[in-house]
Image 1 (cartoon, helix red, strand yellow):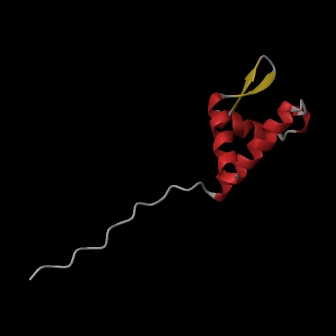
Image 2 (cartoon, rainbow, N blue to C red):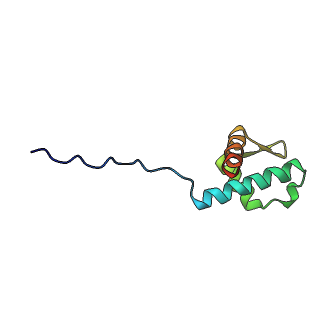
Length: 81
Protein backbone atom coordinates (compact mmCIF):
# COMPACT_ATOMS: atom_id res chain seq x y z
CA UNK A 1 0.00 0.00 0.00
CA UNK A 2 1.45 3.36 -1.01
CA UNK A 3 1.13 6.52 0.97
CA UNK A 4 -0.47 9.53 -0.69
CA UNK A 5 1.96 12.18 -1.89
CA UNK A 6 1.86 15.45 0.00
CA UNK A 7 0.50 18.49 -1.74
CA UNK A 8 3.24 20.48 -3.43
CA UNK A 9 4.41 23.34 -1.31
CA UNK A 10 4.10 26.70 -2.96
CA UNK A 11 7.04 28.94 -2.13
CA UNK A 12 6.08 32.25 -0.57
CA UNK A 13 5.96 35.18 -2.93
CA UNK A 14 8.07 38.08 -1.79
CA UNK A 15 5.66 40.90 -2.35
CA UNK A 16 6.64 44.34 -1.16
CA UNK A 17 4.95 45.37 2.04
CA UNK A 18 2.43 48.18 2.09
CA UNK A 19 5.12 50.36 3.65
CA UNK A 20 7.52 49.58 0.79
CA UNK A 21 4.83 50.29 -1.79
CA UNK A 22 4.10 53.69 -0.27
CA UNK A 23 7.83 54.40 -0.10
CA UNK A 24 8.14 53.55 -3.82
CA UNK A 25 5.33 55.97 -4.62
CA UNK A 26 6.96 58.65 -2.47
CA UNK A 27 10.26 58.10 -4.30
CA UNK A 28 8.49 58.70 -7.62
CA UNK A 29 7.05 61.93 -6.21
CA UNK A 30 10.46 62.99 -4.89
CA UNK A 31 12.12 62.34 -8.26
CA UNK A 32 9.41 64.36 -9.99
CA UNK A 33 10.07 67.28 -7.62
CA UNK A 34 13.82 66.99 -8.22
CA UNK A 35 13.29 67.07 -11.98
CA UNK A 36 11.13 70.18 -11.56
CA UNK A 37 13.85 71.74 -9.37
CA UNK A 38 11.49 71.81 -6.37
CA UNK A 39 13.73 70.04 -3.86
CA UNK A 40 12.61 72.61 -1.29
CA UNK A 41 9.25 70.78 -1.19
CA UNK A 42 10.79 67.44 -0.17
CA UNK A 43 10.32 66.05 3.33
CA UNK A 44 13.76 65.87 4.98
CA UNK A 45 12.95 62.63 6.80
CA UNK A 46 11.97 60.95 3.52
CA UNK A 47 15.12 62.24 1.82
CA UNK A 48 17.20 60.76 4.65
CA UNK A 49 15.35 57.47 4.22
CA UNK A 50 15.98 57.44 0.46
CA UNK A 51 19.67 58.22 1.00
CA UNK A 52 19.99 55.40 3.59
CA UNK A 53 18.43 52.97 1.11
CA UNK A 54 20.85 54.12 -1.58
CA UNK A 55 18.11 55.46 -3.86
CA UNK A 56 19.28 59.08 -3.68
CA UNK A 57 22.68 60.56 -2.97
CA UNK A 58 24.15 63.96 -2.23
CA UNK A 59 26.53 65.12 -4.92
CA UNK A 60 28.19 68.51 -4.39
CA UNK A 61 25.17 69.91 -2.54
CA UNK A 62 22.70 68.52 -5.09
CA UNK A 63 20.45 65.54 -4.54
CA UNK A 64 20.74 62.95 -7.32
CA UNK A 65 18.99 59.71 -8.19
CA UNK A 66 21.32 56.69 -7.97
CA UNK A 67 21.28 53.80 -10.46
CA UNK A 68 19.59 51.68 -7.79
CA UNK A 69 17.00 54.42 -7.26
CA UNK A 70 16.38 54.51 -11.01
CA UNK A 71 15.74 50.76 -10.98
CA UNK A 72 13.31 51.14 -8.07
CA UNK A 73 11.49 53.89 -9.98
CA UNK A 74 11.30 51.74 -13.12
CA UNK A 75 9.94 48.80 -11.13
CA UNK A 76 7.41 51.03 -9.36
CA UNK A 77 6.23 52.49 -12.66
CA UNK A 78 5.79 49.00 -14.10
CA UNK A 79 3.82 47.94 -11.02
CA UNK A 80 1.49 50.91 -11.36
CA UNK A 81 1.07 50.51 -15.15
